[in-house]
Length: 287
Figure (cartoon, rainbow, N blue to C red):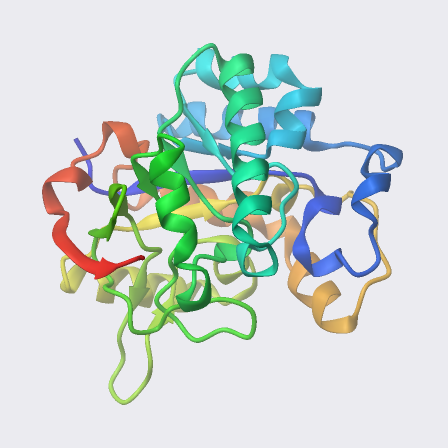
């Protein structure tokens, strides 16, 4: 049983927060959807590598493509929740977050034919100003979360959060948190490694160095990817220059880099990993 986890955030190119200023969520249905084909190609790659992962599925996707959710489950992957409307938590009030999360959980479970235990916030938006959301996750029946990124970033991050799995305590009970992987270099803050744009945009020597450093600290690697990241032929959106840079750089290199990453160590889904054995007691009060 490995301690490294491969996670997939199942969303389409027009769902990303980077383009939310030009893409109206009410018009999502007017965009050509590519999430079905891209997710299946990603699952084919995981089959090739002998890896089963945790798929954090957008409720909007699950409601429109229930056959895709059933296929994710049938191919041995763990279904989990990635919200319904892909809105950062810190832009919602508690009732809006509860309604969005409950709806997403219901449609994903109906499509999957199975209970889901895990949650990942859009844009890793469990931060210091949205810790109130953890209690709602517990009340809705989630047992684990993987949304905390212990880094400095312009839109997300909790740089002072633990870098190893830990529990967050609320009046409703505790939730296990699996923070995204970081590594240390002298005199530098926590550095991210092993997922999304960090895998796709940064040079391979950086990823290799980060993996080596994280392993030297006995940190599990929690890697993540989006189906649109293996799709260099996706439609181009006219967003801000920073959004275009982050979204479109090296899409043609993602598959090869992910294959190398998956060949560097054994990976599994959260439910099939040994991570639960490494969880620290409740070290963060979330309410």
